[in-house]
Amino acid sequence: MKIIENNENIINFTYEDNDLNLEEFLNTMDLSGRLFRKLYKNKKILVNGKYQRKGLSLNKGDVVSLIMDDETEEIAPEKIEIDIIYEDDDLLLINKGPNIVVHPTKSHQNNTLANGVAYYFKENNIKKKIRFVNRLDMDTTGIVIIAKNSFAHQQMALQFENNDVEKKYLAIVQGVIKDEKGTIDKPIGREEEKSIKKIVTDDGQEALTKFKVLERYPDATLVEVQIITGRSHQIRVHMNYIGHPIIGDTLYNEKNQFIDRQALHSYYLKARHPRTKKSIEFSAPMPYDMVNLTNLMTD
Image 1: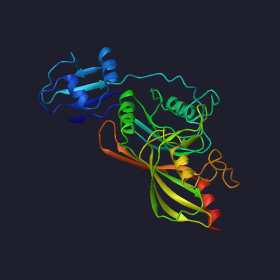
Image 2: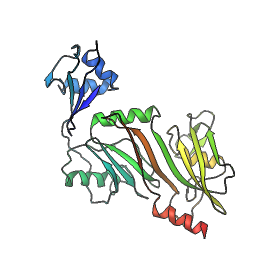
Image 3: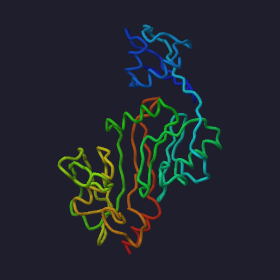
């Protein structure tokens, strides 16, 4: 497989194998059956510029194209500052600030990250829907990925589903961790049926967290945390479980006078680009409120 031409609305692949038909080839590209059926039904899959039946046997050198049409976003645009880490025809990565919801909900209809991105898309004539690949809690900062088309979203979501994405966080936790590093392999489930709070429980979902101490303070520790699985509240629950809850986390710890949220930041992400399949990695610096917290603990 060879990828050619970089076009916002056209994703091209050059066929270099043998004995595969169109549908089989796109299956080797990890194109989901659902997306294949949608594109095929709408005649948005072309071979050498023409619509062909899905059972067509491909020849070496054939160019298979996926057409990504312009779209209309229904989320209301609002002029909200967004910190862009990276952008291309397929992806938009943002360093999310503190105290902002990612997507509109019943209780947060406005002033969300999605509203800000909708405004950015409108101002820059980007005619695409906003597709969040990952999400962060309102009070967690760091890297958020937005896919600009259905192909990029499906490809990135598959990597997250298969735990193929390397995700690292910075957290400031209560107490001094003695070990230099550790692994927490404990299942996570709801505390009660309708509760948002999660706990370690035998009948929960598998959850694996690794941590490494970066700096120790008199009564706290700065740790780098890598989540192998992606459970809701995973880091917050696991760090609380080992007796080192995140500072400022009012759900699993207590309110802190020096920071008005949990001191948790998604600072590093490594994945494969949905179009080129090449390794991509990004980082976002520790936010001001966490830097301020470490300075206060050092003084």
